[in-house]
Length: 119
Image (cartoon, rainbow, N blue to C red; front, side):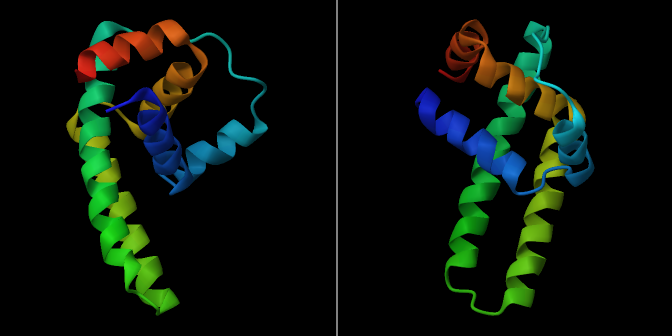
């Protein structure tokens, strides 16, 4: 998986509302600062991201033919719940996942480390 696709998937996960409350906190926060991410956290992040990617693919396909806005909303809620479960099953909370996602986007060294883990 190339890095651009990974970052796009991470952004998509965050945009889907993977923790609406956390997103609200980021809006009020100043520019993200350098964040320390341990190897274990990066490994957990990679595990969660792989599962999230599968969930996104599944729900994107399921949303393709849906014309009813209420049904689409229900599917989005279900996808968010499954993605949250994936993050928690990997040993992280949503806030930590989002913090790591932001750190990876802003730190080329972390991007490289994540790429190596994913290969």
